Length: 83
Length: 428
Image 1 (cartoon, each protein chain N blue to C red):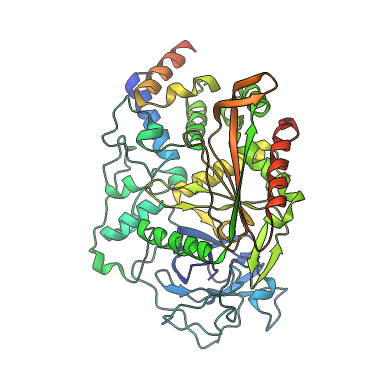
Image 2 (cartoon, rainbow over the protein chains, first blue to last red):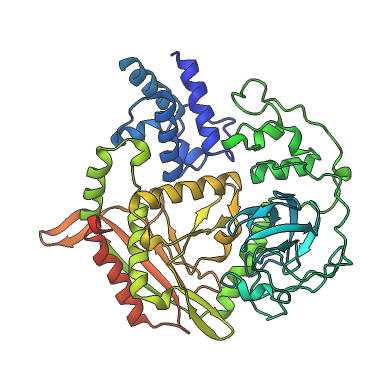
């Protein structure tokens, strides 16, 4: 799966669990918890959605790596190619 | 029209989910109503058959006025709504429950009823005809987020004509905005039928940050005016609870993990079973303890405002069940699909600041409740322990409670009970 596809999927799942956020102008490096006010429940829902959609195992300790768009794409690319 | 808060005077019917002839059971969702708190699904409190709808989408209906007629085996003439109603949301003025007849347009929707169920087997005058259907009436159920409804109302767009990309196909703001979504699904671009705002018909209020701000202002002003608050604070050592939870979560896939906030909620719920004076309602100069532990979970809305819908029977749920319910509740707050019972059932509120909060929250009681428990952020802090001063995870638990109902001594014991329960997390 390409990075563009992973990026697309990540954004799609994010917009699904948090339809009330606006990602316009949010840089890839921004912490989404600050940039669009995601709380721990939102992050948990996002991990679940990504896990179910991609089948990628995301250990609790790695959750922090998915809090930026850029970090998430890099992490998912690494994990999905590893499996 | 049920009262979904102390400050609610009326609501706008958005859609019917039933039609005459439909059989309904207690708890079924029969309609969606737009209030200051967004779109709310109205649950019926009795079983039977819908015989007549008395309101049309777009109508503004006063609290207490009937929405529909219901015919059921248990129905007996003359029985009033209040008799079978859910716990009363609140009442300043003990007005007669429901208006006997429904005027086509309630001129002065100011009745605040003590107890009105989300149903309408009310003896309505047969002469009353359903109001003429609104022009913008949605044909069927349209799932949409509050932001989407607001934007659609502003632009005069019919939500029914839009393909949603949100959860369960819900229409989200970007669907309405058209093309603002970063990666719209193929075909999701709405072919928005653009009517002008003037043609969208009657008062569709829509979710509105300003309206919610007004609702919060009214409730909180009343709280600070009427409720003599007292405040207590207690620091809880979270070494055991955090360690236990980390270990539990490490072995689990994301969908089975539990957030630390659930331990705090469950411990509060169990403590409440031993301290019932913090769970209930103060109305008409008397305290009525709640029959069950339904906890309002404060959820901040992005863009402003907050709601505290009820999680039911928290004391009886496993941590996993509680987590699933809380996730569902937050998702429905985000997409604007809360249910009427969630607005009326809570006997206490718990507010938890989450992981990026601050040390301590001093709550304001949500009337007619009599207490609010607050948890600051769980974080590493200096604590005097058996080893001296250590850096350990702690949380600051606070209680704001109504001095008309309880005293500081009991409040202190209540917070200590929560502490004690958190020291044995496997028993939660």
